[in-house]
Length: 78
Image (cartoon, rainbow, N blue to C red; front, side, top):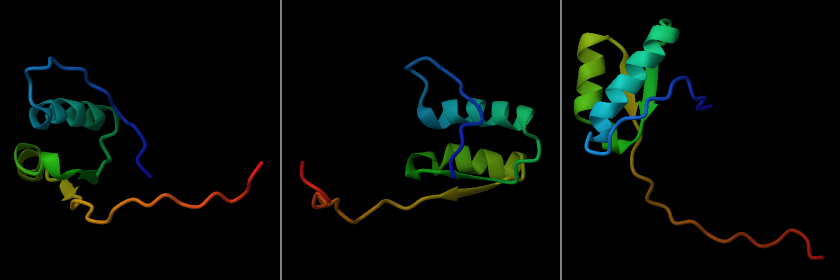
């Protein structure tokens, strides 16, 4: 479903994989029963390794979408 559990704003010179660690640790503080998380392919190294090793939380990394988007026909005309 993808509900937002925590938000962390960091400086622009911090890479998202390292900034994501702060965000997820904040979410774990408020919701300690989290047992898994989904992230996109940009979080595959530092973020995934950190949480699987230190927090014992499963991190699923989504694969890159290969299909192209198509414009759907209009259902009705005014």
